[in-house]
Image 1: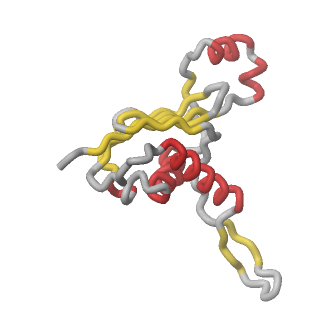
Image 2: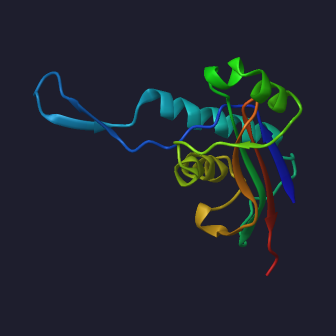
Length: 148
């Protein structure tokens, strides 16, 4: 089993944005720079935590535990009650956008590009996935390869 703690604010994978080509005036579609940088940062963080003798997972993989820790809103931080709950580590579920499925995409792409898993289609089972508020944003994921 491998456990990763990524100190990065979770983001969703945005589909492409539409713009205009300055020379031709035609519509063009592109991935925003911010999203590309986020994926590169995820790859770096995963690579740094990968054991030196680690072999890429090539069998089915179980995501035993996954936490997307989202930053609290300014309104939440103004509330003494909610701020106190966050200080004590209470779980306050994040129930607005981005959706969990869109947050999984850049993470799984980074797991593949970092060499942790051969392909994200190997992820066969999710056990415990949560999106919650925390004062320190981040991602924690526990992966286990199923030996066949």
